[in-house]
Length: 333
Ligand SMILES: NC(=O)c1ccc[n+]([C@@H]2O[C@H](COP(=O)([O-])OP(=O)(O)OC[C@H]3O[C@@H](n4cnc5c(N)ncnc54)[C@H](O)[C@@H]3O)[C@@H](O)[C@H]2O)c1
Image (cartoon, rainbow, N blue to C red; front, side, top):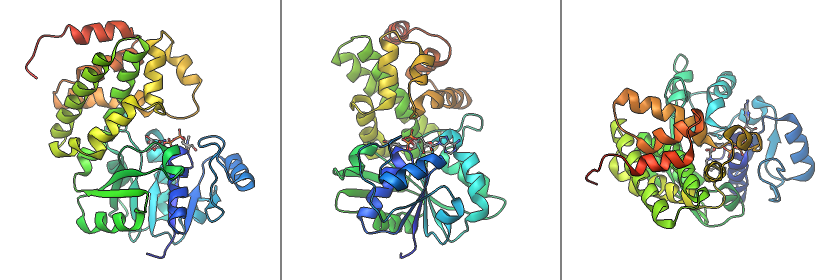
C-alpha cells in the first residue's frame, strides 16, 4: 500500500510505532493530543513526555490536527489509552471511512460497557459503516521497539485477508508480526496481564521470593485463560506472544509500569500518591474494575484479579491480599 499510515496517539507506544514504521520507509503521520507536545516534537524531534531521548525521524509528520493526520490514510493505528478510546474515536469518525484499515493498539477493557477496544471502535462506527479492524499485541516495551531492538508480536483479526495484509505492511527486519485469528483472546489477554503484573510487583515490593512470583504469574495465566475461554477466545492464544509472551514481559520486565505500581504498593505506598507521580498510564489499575465486573457477569473466579481490585480500589492491604490467596481452599491445578 502506498497510502500513509496514520497513528493516533503520541504516547510511548504511538511514538514507538511511528518511529518503527518510518524506519520501514512508510509515510507516517502522528497525531498528538497535547498541542505543546507537537510544538516540542517538531522543534526537537523527540518526545520528551512519553519517550525521551529517542530521535523521531524527520519523515514522521506530527500534528495536533486529526484531519491532517487522517486525510487519505490507508492504515489507521489507534494508540491512545483505553479510557479515552471512545471519545477519541468519536472525534475521528467524521474523518474516517470504510476503505481504511484500523488497528487497535491499546490494552484495556472499557469500564462501563465491558467492551474490548475493537468492540468500542465497532460500536462507535456501527451506525455509519462496518469497520475492518485488527489488534496488535505482544511483548513490546515501547522504548525497546523505538530503539529497533528485535521484537515479535501478533496482529489479530478473524478476517484472514486483513491480518495477512497488515502483517506484510507492518513487519520489518526487527519487528516481526505473526498472524492470529483470535481477536477476542488476544485483546482479553492483553488487558488482564496488566493486572497480574501489578500483583507480581506487589509480591516483589513485599520482599517475597522468586517462588511466589513464579506461582503468581502461572496462576495468573490460569485466570487469563479462564476469562479468555469464557469470552469465546481460544486456549492456544495464551501460549503465544499475546498470552504468555506479554505476561512474562510485563510481570518481570523493569520497564513495566503496572509492575512498578504494584511494587510501590507492596512497599507500603498509597495508590493515589503512586498514580499522582506517574504521567504515563498503568492500564491495569482501571482494567481491574472491568475485569471484576466481567468475571461477575460470566460467573467465573478470578482470585488474583479480585484481590488486586481490592488493593487498588477498596483500600485492601497488599500483604493481606497475598495471604488470602495462599489460604484459599485447596484445589486441583
Ligand atoms: N508503552 C508501551 O510499551 C505499550 C506497548 C504496547 C501497548 N501499549 C498500550 O498502548 C496504549 C497507549 O499507551 P502509551 O504507553 O502509549 O501511553 P502513555 O502513557 O505513554 O501516553 C498517554 C497517552 O494518552 C494520551 N492522552 C491522555 N489524555 C488524553 C485524552 N483525553 N484524549 C486523547 N489522548 C489522551 C496522551 O496524549 C498520550 O498519547 C495503552 O493502551 C497501552 O497499554 C503500550
